[in-house]
Length: 340
Image (cartoon, rainbow, N blue to C red; front, side, top):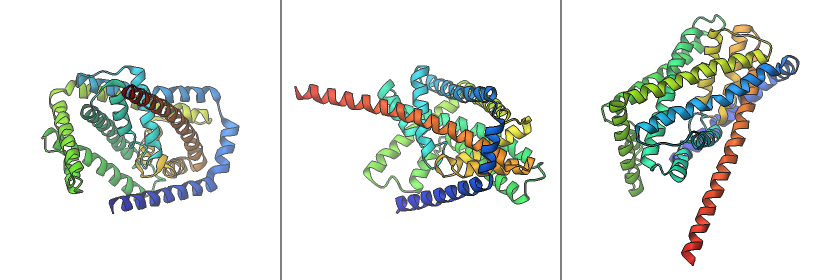
């Protein structure tokens, strides 16, 4: 029953997302492509692409800090590979920000010997830092959106509710984790995932992860602070990234527009649709229609952003196939030795 509801929800939001994409494509697609063709500045586009690739570096450094607090270490390039692989899986799942984490935990175990419980707690902590930073970004962005005359009251209300729910959920999660009351285990119990033998084992693993997370928040405040600083590096990189992306199309944008753009991009990524399809185009086109009366600029931006995302997905799945091939080879060698 749970799987049926999940599949129905997935199909519903995918259909909605595709519908939104086709609508904005029909409305702004031709003018957006003409805009790119006529205005593209390859120097600024090259800087944007370089910043896009660099944006994965702070993610690696942030997780390295959290791993170090757990007395573990993974080199930069192996962790970068795992981060890109996780990004690829997350991109094609219902939310761009989630989905690839189990793969990252598995790769950390197989390639670096990090046990599943430690890997899981590190990944969850890493996502918490990311969402905490995104919530702060969202609050700032929402505050700025309130002063845009072209944005309707209903839209401001919807965005406000979305940011409030996200921020409240993070505060609730942090409070219960610090107090060792558990948030993840509560979800497991509420949905009765622990009613089977495997479920009980899973609940035990979740409780252990929560214990490690509580210890991290209590004893490793310095590591938490440093990891958050690396999120701030990501935030600055995002601002520069989109600054040069807009410049590459022959336009300029101030810090206010850039923060709003990034905030809406974050909200689009949370939408339960693979790659945020439709929601990315809707938010960007709607924003530029509101502030510049030209939705084609936003649609052109979304096309370039999506192309870069799909390019990284291709790289990610190449890395996953390489990892899978090595695992199959190891298994074959092991079975061969056992058969001798």
